[in-house]
Length: 434
Image (tube, rainbow, N blue to C red; front, side, top):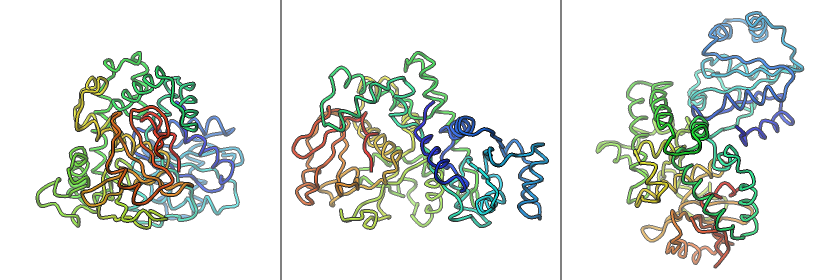
């Protein structure tokens, strides 16, 4: 499957190859697959090392010898005379060796032309909890996410539709109604199966029939996420808190207060008791945090209130699975309250995939703007609607008070620009850039 991160890997190869590259991301999002494709396609020679399957490498880097000797012993173990000029080495599951992570500094500073790429499950969590030193400034890091809607369309063979969406987005031009409805139908399917590559492959294999889709794929990923919550934790109590936060997110998204409440986890839950567990989840990239903007001023990240936030799940397929929503109710548009919640979570994942920080704004109980975008046009409010009923008191309040250059409304309505509001269909959210 084609992934947009591939171009970022090419950019690393062309501009910053001397720095080892670390790819961070949750389990089952396709890290190993795309790195394998990149290494095989872009280099003459390629060595793949999986530390879970080759623990001998872990033991070599634990030895009390210098890094060069460790590398030489690794070559002996691999029975390879490595041609460094033409070879890339991929260390998968690198979180299993703190010593190897620390050794990345050596690979960066050495005169020899090392080419190193690394990935692993819960690597983001492990890097935050290293006992040894992390080679700050000596590595390049990229974060990878589940497939966004554009990548889903690419997998579906809908490249012509992608180009039409991009054209209509840039020109604020309404799309042909047939194509508009087609794209909305594909969007609803994406809500159901989410962006996990295995899930999308299963949908494609089953004749693109959502009724034939194997739901157990997402259920198994959810279980694997719960199992991961016992790794790299301080104790079993922290693991239980991580799981409690994660399982509470679907109901948290339905809060009348529109923010995360520790009291929703349990009646005695307090922030100080759950901060470490929350940081674990954020480091894992299983969840995304959207913080409150106190004042819409530049730079907005300098005016956020970290104590008021929302949490979104990293994948809508997992969200629907946790809520046990029947796919027909999504496809046939039978949902009421949770329709808006699912839609908002979807938009959050698409913004995150474009490296847009998640920020929201509210004014007491009077108004709330779902997301705030900071781009070359200044601070732009983004309103999300799950349907085509586009009346909005909140957006009017914000625009009258802060006079943004324009606003963005994401809904099921077609493209257009009216009353200083840029209308973007939900399926085109991937077009929004910084």
